[in-house]
Length: 292
Ligand SMILES: [Zn+2]
Image 1 (cartoon, protein in one colour):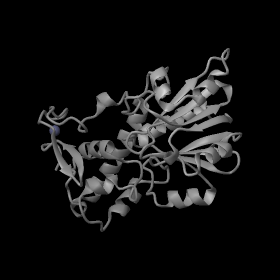
Image 2: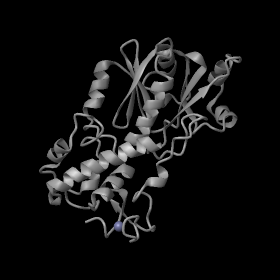
Image 3: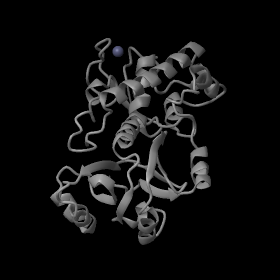
Image 4: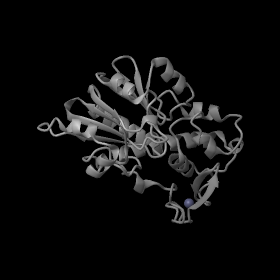
């Protein structure tokens, strides 16, 4: 599942490529992926300009020039893909938007999945939202957006969120640390991959009780979390599917995980075998020697 780094990489690409573009065409291939009736969704978004793209936690927010927003969450396997249409063949966008999802998948091998919603943009760009089965793309007003985002905990990259704030949040909390880290109501954008990495770097076992974590360890955990997220963004995150055919950055962080998805392999610090166990219904990866 894409987490904060992967969504941040999408955000950066979208701001670079899609910001200020106008939505000229739209097609909904999977009605349940949008919150309006499919035709109404298309007529509503067509003609709108995308003013910019923001991220909060695992959400991306497209700001439209009518004061509304497109809010998307990828959930498990949602993916974005950007295609550029040959300037000499502008009717190609029409052809794409009139094709069915199966034909698209067959025709464009690069597509990261089955198209759920497709937006035809100005300057020959086509933005695909694929595999929005659990994920979605919702057209929302300001109030609706705020209601949705109010449920979210602070984003680890929020400049107003400090190690001190993080330690305060943990104060008096019960239960194990890993499930707490992954609950978006506590902090947002952190899933299985980066919670495992942060705990490894901070030397804290995923099963450690929050009440048994010292202040110094909480600070270290926050710094580890922010560092692994920042480093992952710099190196391309862990997603396997590129954002566009020219994108050779995405997935670059996969080779750098120290604990996540490394069960049975030697710890890069001490050589002990990385263990895997289920914690809070999700896989925890840890070094029994380096983490306590
Ligand atoms: Zn170790």
